[in-house]
Length: 355
Image 1 (cartoon, rainbow, N blue to C red):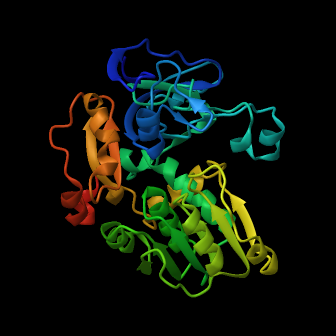
Image 2: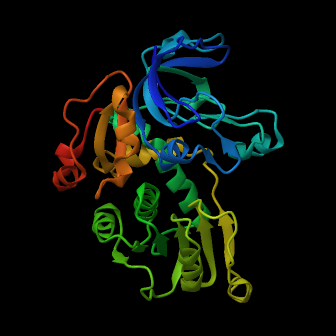
Image 3: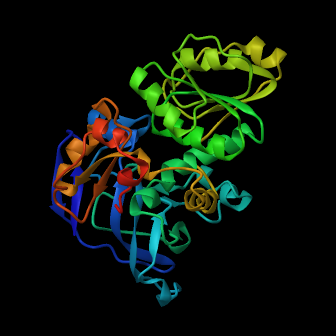
């Protein structure tokens, strides 16, 4: 198979790799679509994320969908031919965390595109059968791949405990912030304020759930919950100040390793402060939200690329108005990748893509 491979010196090459073999309880998937995450670009530009360092050849990509083309022992042969969305995790099922249901926190986790585990920017991958989620008819390959970042939004909104009539402030209008806004709206929140320094991204946020957009530093009436999708200390401090007594704060964005936070505000208001690390038990909810039309993932795709174009896909986040780039591993070059402005100005129907 063909694979896009990152080397420690930042080189990206397309190479031939052996097709993986599905072991017991696993499925082999022909990859149809891979969303590009900021973490992928970070590995290319900086060679590491925290303690995770690129020390050898690595296949990036963890937002993926495809079709099952082979099964290992113990997996029904009838699954061959299923279109699936991939939950890119392989936890130890016997760890304390997995047994509690918090399998995303398993200390023995093997996660796509986290060194040294290869990801999905290639033609075939394997995953545990239970982490290959069947995709209903009518859900595009684009949307099936983007169930992964949508799951982050679902995990964040669950932690924020948002419900009917609630209000939320979200810092950051990147892909995760927009996912959080859409899930908040679907959960019944009626006031969704998005804080974002970029004017174009503020405009985009109004298309994906925000009822109000503001620039950082703008006063915001008290909210029931604050979700930070920026990782910026100043944004977190400001968000904490906007939360009502006994409200909730959820940290999703990964920025500085340490922050100085207003402890007296947290204590005196009895604010519940927590973090989100990936997700657990979210895929059924994600697919239900897509099928119902309560979230729009196809409309978030602003660039499409072939396997030879991975470098351009990784740099798409630098294009004004870009939201989400998606790679087709089975294609060398996508002949006409729309720019972000064209994609965002198109109607929801023309922006959809069977990726």
